[in-house]
Image 1 (cartoon, rainbow, N blue to C red):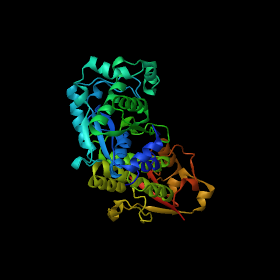
Image 2: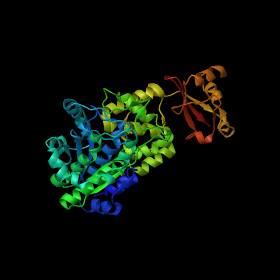
Image 3: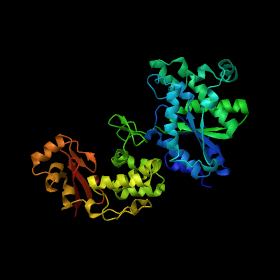
Image 4: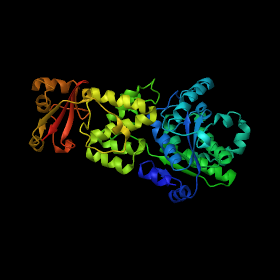
Length: 422
């Protein structure tokens, strides 16, 4: 059995744990149950949920049993973590509807057959609770002073933290206790903003059951530009294709910043991590194609991913038309006809050592008829260099900007040229 701790560590999932050595030893000795909670705040998960989904997937592939906890009860309260204001209160009927939408998306990542994974709803044990009994049975174990030190609480105290939100930590801690009691769950995982809640659950479980349980958090994922991962022009990128089309989902990853590709490969695909690192060194644009294809395969299936990849290549060109980059991805099984080949122009490699003016590059490639036309294209935001918008008409392209002596430049959405420096 592969050690899931080392897999998650190597792929960039680990931010903080309650005990690195103990968790690594535990996961190497036996199969355990672990869980992550997902509140039903919308009828679909968005790609911000991919880190916890993939973590559960890796745990299952390593021989452990993941529990996907649907927060039908905690959604009624609202988690203050990472929020600047109180979450909008939802009706019970709305939460149930949202929960059904989310359930189907779990099945893309986890195998629920023969109890290999479980899906439970904390509404089953939270909704029937008697308030006074809960305070006496659970609340007695919590220190207000300690709760106030939790990062999720401290951030909200400045903007105003409601009493109902302040109770969220108790409810999430109670979840861990119930899952440890009823399902022998020994590990809770979540985002780094959940640390206080996870530690509270570990402590409550130890006090009430005398059982040692553990916690693990994942790092907050941001783009290299400092933006929150999963936002595209201010909108969330959803796993539901009716909210975000499969093509737009694919393109979000295809257009990832070069600096983020290796990180995303580790987090959001099942490709061997060594291969992922090598791909980004060989041909960054081919790596982006493979990243987008692999992530889309997991979220929407191979057929939809193939269609998105083919449509993207037809529109913007193929990054590795000669098939020079080797990969274990079954993207290699996709056969593209001549219609998707990209017009290619060759330019002297010496230009790179001197620094070639981006305006000249667009003219030499035949995408613009004059320097003036190229300048206007750049100023209007219609010029792209390796899928990144050209920021200024004064930009110079040098060897460090080019991978494998070739680049893809684009004018608008449909006019594409592959430039090879020879």
